[in-house]
Length: 270
Image (tube, rainbow, N blue to C red; front, side, top):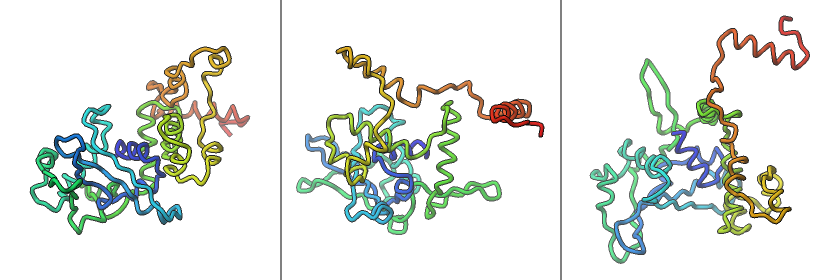
């Protein structure tokens, strides 16, 4: 679930609460491919919660068609989301139980899309739902959203496992996504502001534009900027060190507390 949360945070540049509010009813259609061939499963996200949470009168929609030859199946929202829906047996047609069966569906010639109806009693189920352990059994509470504290805790654990020097937090997806939008060359300032729900570009400049610049020497000397090296020294993975321990034993913990107290000018034994 944490992988899906990160992907949706990146692909929609949404805030934490907006992503956690996604429900089954927000999601899927089947689209006819303009160049022919089998229909394309598409996830179309229009989180209604954003409207009330941000006071917006108009709502962004994000269409995410399936990319067959994508970067990785592990980086595919379709693999995760359809897996969740099939596991929950969420589709109204009883025969729709796998991607293989979905790909056999045909869209009539006079239509562009086919809706994939969700069972009525499941429409308000949450993608990121609450999970509890009771009497040694795991219970999935699909009608209750995951708490913000729970997702923050999972991001923190993920950061420790990967060896990040600082824990991940949800708003970083907006920082990183905003940077990619700004540098893509495909998105205008106006469209970037609309996607990120900013009234003006000043918000992006004040809070989202990266402050670490790695190509100043090349630019001033008239050389070609090394974009690959710039990405290497400005992304979070620069500080990954998997030797960094996740937990300290009693001796290490005491030494760490003593070092911190000493740095603060305190007596650790007091």
